[in-house]
Length: 175
Image (cartoon, rainbow, N blue to C red):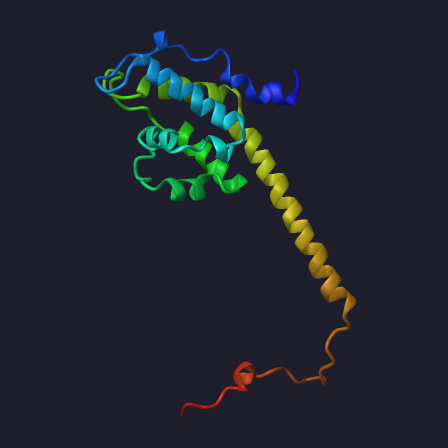
């Protein structure tokens, strides 16, 4: 199985309305449509083009994200970088799915969480975050080694150490 197909396998089969209980405000089809949209958004690596106002308007009301009330702040919190994406998946999959499906999306939440856990997306993303962090740290290490190993150490007479106040010696006194 290819990596892309494996990565997106949690989307299939598509969610069907028959698997969900309608609420007073949303049909079972609304639940299935949103669930498929959420899974597609995740499978597309949180593609910004899929981050619509309508999609956000449903997402922030479910999976315990209710405290997020600003679409752009939500994006910055979760989708700007790999650690944020990992935090999003952790927050989403740790949601306890409270409530009666006739009044909440708890039935859909359970299905989505089950699929994401079965696909081991958190573990995969955690590995990607670790690799990215190591690459950033190694690049910084190379830069620092080049900077400090290439330059000769400063010459300082033996026994003399800088005074704590030397850093501010060019500042006028206020006393």
